Image 1 (cartoon, rainbow, N blue to C red):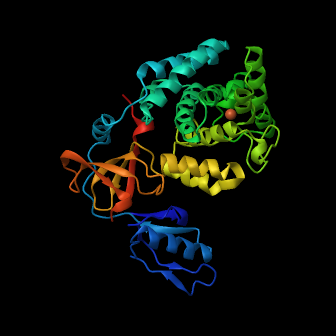
Image 2 (image 1 turned 45 degrees about the vertical axis):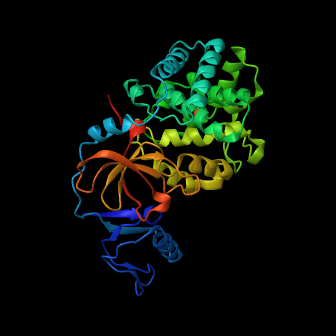
Image 3 (image 1 turned 90 degrees about the vertical axis):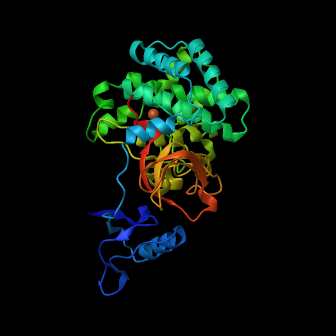
Length: 376
Ligand SMILES: [Fe+2]
């Protein structure tokens, strides 16, 4: 089967399904049909070459002999057992707290503080917490599921910044409360499946201000927490809202939550669009680069979680199937993999690890993200 692929998304192992010509006069053949991309070095060179000639998309042939993939549910079950997962109790409490705030409009800051304390303690104790959010797929209100996802991921990411425990708690609390102001935005606008009318978007753009108002009325005193609520939609370029702050005028905590917020939004199913796989979301965020995000925070996010976050189920270039166990900070595209199935899709009796940074093998396909798509 032939499919269109953005040049940016080309990967080693991709086979060109059509000749690629220089697009203006169509005289120069840039890549012949049938050409198979070798390693990442070749892939990057090719991308640069194609972009120089202003080629945006190419046709890739995805009909290749592959052993059939075992049922994804089965691979997930096997892979999930490998990870420490944030405890069911903490996650349920987080959901209950946010649900109460969302549905009843009551914000009990003491309860949020206790929850954040436990979340931060758990993340510090485990160090690496698998972002398995499968249990929350039972809840269908995006706003509070999203707030919980963002706070767990933020707590984990914030460990990278040598923050004090108070700062860790502030950023996690800010993340849990970041969209609080959406309580004052009509549901029909929030869940509208199509594009928003300008006045509807103006309404949405006020949610950071509403959020600050609600938090302060409930007794929130921390400037750090307030900065996350008020600035999480500010862009590094100054083109965000509500105030158009730019660069380091946006608090570091808000710049952190902004990256996590967009990542989670892109990798979660919404009423109007299906979710992206993590690596697709990261490619998109890299495209937007310094316009939207603080580049240093974004690159730290990528080196912390990798292009292929922990829990991605992947097929390697030799056909084996495994799960991303750990990212390699120095080489985000070459994480450590636990191999679960051989190249004939037979279960490996004794799953073993491969560090792709010291191997010829590379990730050929992403089959699924363990963290987002599991339905119990
Ligand atoms: Fe928001």
